[in-house]
Image 1 (cartoon, rainbow, N blue to C red):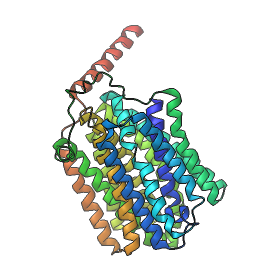
Image 2: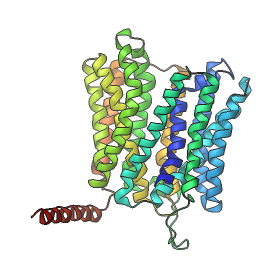
Image 3: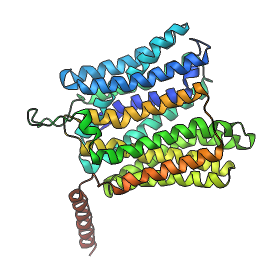
Image 4: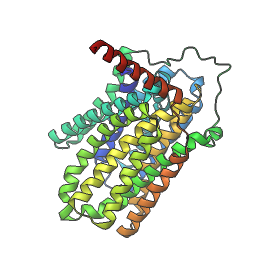
Length: 400
């Protein structure tokens, strides 16, 4: 379990820390042209998605263990290159290289989690993965504060975070646990069959809509509010604490997902965030702003655990990587790409209209989950309840 969580959480912590410091800071020594930096960010997310899709399409033809080594070291080397690059031309090189180092191995590394866990424990393991990620992110941001955002120090922190993925190879071979798979009989889904797989789409659509809502919130709703001095404290406190909310709610989501199924934590996350926007529609002050930032982090924790668990529940053994490429890397790429595009173009709008749009998007996204079928087997849930009942009976007998 440690191997399959740390190899993913190391890469995720690297990505979230990169998002935390922003590309403007990362590329500060390469160019001062903000438009070029935003373009490099778009390239980063595009190549992250593109490399994930390509790698998951040809995974059965390549050595997957070597793929993991290449994936990790490409992240380390491309990060180190940022420290030496000078000139706008390198944006065209480093943007794609950093993107490839994010997306290349993610579908396979996440499929290991699905391969090596039973459905009734997959949610909790996903929650542990998320907790590890944000503990490392917290340590990285703390170190960033200590070094006062020193440029070379930031590069070192990024490299250290990516190096943690190598710990997986010291405790495990990082190969699929499903050794019994019959390669001839095992079905391999096409991209079209996955995109038209109704049960998967009903979970995929809310996750995508949440990402769209996150882009609107972060790049259209929050920027004007950050200029308000009365709300400054809410942003200062809420910015680090909403990551804490993600980590805690990731664990809670994992427990709920393994006990009562995947639908419940998804609905909780969407309702929680939608309700926070409803309150902001009536009044915006320090308290509602702080609550909104916490709701974004908490909703992300609830939904991300489900997005990691559901492909393992639904995918055929030889198709898990394609499922993960779609449900995880692609929405994240859309989130980052749309965010960069909104800043380049300078899109803005009335606050009331943005809030109403967010409320509609989030509450509409509940409908697919509400009508979807539970992916956690009802037999597994009955077995768990029976086991808990027998344990209680045993405890009563021992007391008597």
